[in-house]
Image 1: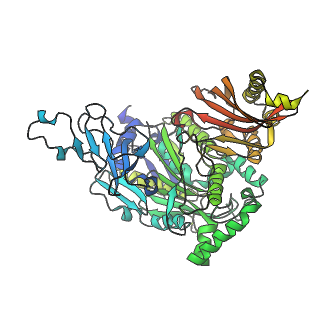
Image 2: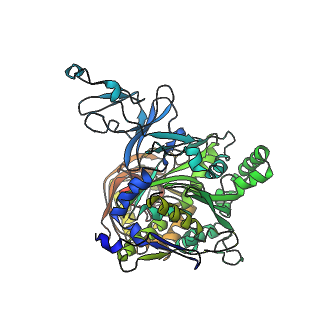
Image 3: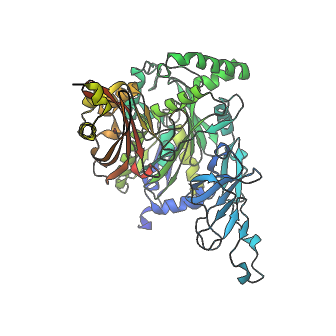
Length: 430
Length: 167
């Protein structure tokens, strides 16, 4: 790649005077920029690892890749939740190969080093061959420098000096709380069954797509049609600029975090009935709503039950509290490809019927067999294919709704600009 | 014809003919005709790759359709605005190792291996490998699909992309 060509090219052109925001398309195609993102973003920001509910009992573990690194997310024998980098301190092999399970020890198959699930190196075959300077206590599995949680959502940070997770999340905690308040006990759980899909597109396009309600009528007309066929009113409201059946806002939460905040029109398992749920679901939905009102009061209950939100925790965690609740994370595998993982989240004490309804509602929209996600995947892949023209068509236009006096709509691009401004700040070194 | 005895003793050849016919309809995108092979309470499941033996009521599936949603799925994927299937995937499925695994009254349980090759536009070929599990219902001289479960062998679905066609 010729560095001279782009030496002076900015990543973004942010021009409030002319109400113009342009994105340099190179940031979506360049392997060099991806390498810089690894250092400036994935090694500096809080990255989602997993949810405490995935580790129910002592010694439970799951393995996954987080920020491209294989990690073990586990509960040790004392019940403490840990994150360990899944690599033997001896010669590097992965020490836990199972996807999930229950184990007190992780054993390396290569030379037999074995570790406790607290990370301590316990066994080295033939350790009498080492000099006295070799101390097993120095060779435990490495933990990321920082590992913190907010209400059962666990994040790691590779920057020892990073601000505490709670401060990083900032105002986003209000929206995480709003999701968790679906549960009478305040405990949500990741439901069994993982959805995974690769998208041949840059990872940042998934951030945009997860919150961009502008694309809903054009990308998801077949889903809207399905909603309509099932008896949901999908006619756009008459208000100027509105493309959707109900009003929704885009809200800046600080630190590159942001959310949509929408009046619900699509039904909610907690707790707004739509015909897809079936007539026999009505009494239970009514009861769920009644419990919300008793626990939270009518105003907050309405906030939980009658609004939905797509929340982005910078850089790569999305909580979509829409047709159902999905926890979605993704990481790049090259500039033009990403891996997406998605789980369903629900109240721990949910009844069997409510749980079944939640999962059914999830599949109406989300996932590789859903009525909407496959079209998102298609749209993002078409973007990536078109971006091959980046040298001749170097800028993407992202000024929708810029300079408005009133609230920014979810179909404006205000929240996308929040993302890109923050991304740009980090990539420029602070 | 004594349908009771036919139900009690369906031949593998009869089941194979039925599955091959279904495969041809799906590969040819004759989805309206395919819907006619289903009972009015038919269900279609694709369990998640990490929990193939689970129940859609307590586990997040890739697909868990009742007959209403199946009909809506066909409306959706035949719609020119279903971008993920516009143009349609070209699929070719090979079905083998067909086994009758149980008979209960007019219901016949069937297992079969499959490979479904999928091409779309100029993308690389995607290869779905797994097992079909059917509950077929004897209706007169005909067979109908009451339950259709697709178990994928891949450890994860990621590299196979969306299941936006009928698998």
